[in-house]
Length: 197
Length: 240
Image 1 (tube, rainbow over the protein chains, first blue to last red):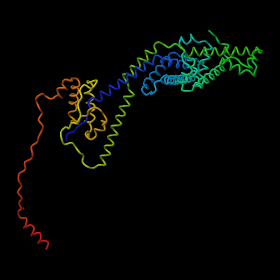
Image 2 (cartoon, rainbow over the protein chains, first blue to last red):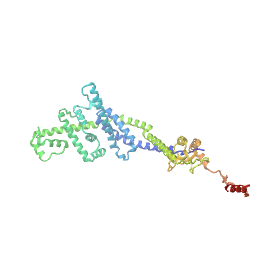
Image 3 (cartoon, chains in turn yellow, cyan):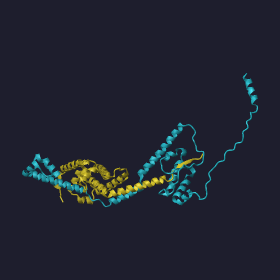
Image 4 (cartoon, each protein chain N blue to C red):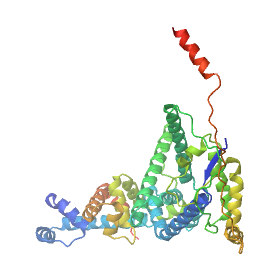
């Protein structure tokens, strides 16, 4: 008995070629968005973490995740919103794990409560009121915090923020209003530390 | 201290930044403490907005985008998730096909139809020069062929590995010749002149059609069997 095999010469090479071409297209398209969306991811992470080095790590991670899932994103116009959510979620995760670590260390060594490590740049731009403000921001609910951060960023309209967050413009406006009022309530007692430029 | 009745209205006015209207405006004109409170609230909101602006518009480190691009290059080289998913899917398909085959075999006890003849070529055409990267062809073909070669029932199950809808030519070859075929196809892809020469007819030379001779059967002579009558009478006597 002679054994026969059905083979398909060239099919693997062609599918490999198609895959590489699709990958190159996705890379090109992603690169086009990187220049605008890279800084956005960094600023979202920085707004949550208040630390330049951590924010850079998180932004990188968010951009890589976005790239890995880029071909699964059907509506490419939603990329910015998608990236913002990835960066925000990753930054929150890191902040929570840092807080847990801090609490654990505090329990063991009982030191005085220390602020998160800051770079020279962080220290230079901060003043006492800024510190209180950023702490108050941490205590805001996530929904309010993200909208408030995006509204404070340069170059984004209410409509764009609504698109990024996936809510109507009216909701964005009300969230901004509520968030600012909550911050004011928390910071009223620190108003004497305000040092305006 | 601001008047209790206007406290919330003052905060709201400072938060929205809208122009004062109606009763509040009239009250502020006559109440110095409420005016001072409003100024303080406005100052607080201005400070909050300024602080938020600082927090939200931090300077992006110049190293961010180059680092991301370098990381993207690494991802492009590795491309693990999709590749891994395909591998897992292919393995699962092979296992499933094998299980289906074994179940089908246990239900049908009849002997298998085996191919007794030599190699049979499917009615397909080899199209040289259609592949983008001929260097990968022999490896790819060997890889594809090896799946069938290791399988004891490769002929019957070959359609499980190669969908009928595929537009690529499929060739049925003996198991020990698939590597040679893969090399041959690679050569054809690299050298179109060889392929052309192989497929072209030699001018002035006609390939004769095969015409098998008819079977010659001699005339048949019919004779009665020897001793047939004696055997018949003997059997009748035993019955009596």
